[in-house]
Image 1 (spheres, helix red, strand yellow):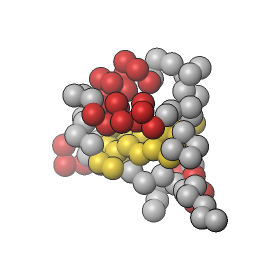
Image 2 (cartoon, one colour):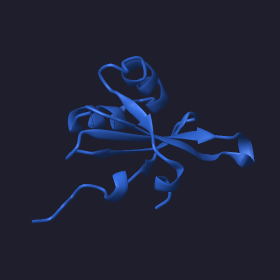
Image 3 (tube, helix red, strand yellow):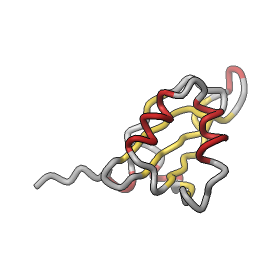
Image 4 (cartoon, helix red, strand yellow):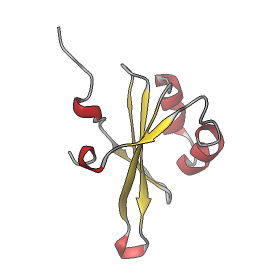
Length: 97
């Protein structure tokens, strides 16, 4: 039997075209959404803090990935609902691959 759960809470992230969000990923086995925000500006811009959101289905992830604006989708359908999608910041040592 193969364990498909990401090691130490790691979820494969995919870069997205967004000024607010650097990359996103999803673990369908645990219904966990991973969002790495962008930090910095201009030449200093890069990956920032990583958060995991619970209760996020594969269908919801597909809609998020397909959104015209990843940032607007996050701000309209995910961020305002912490009771539906409880979240936590992932420890810094778990952020590196």
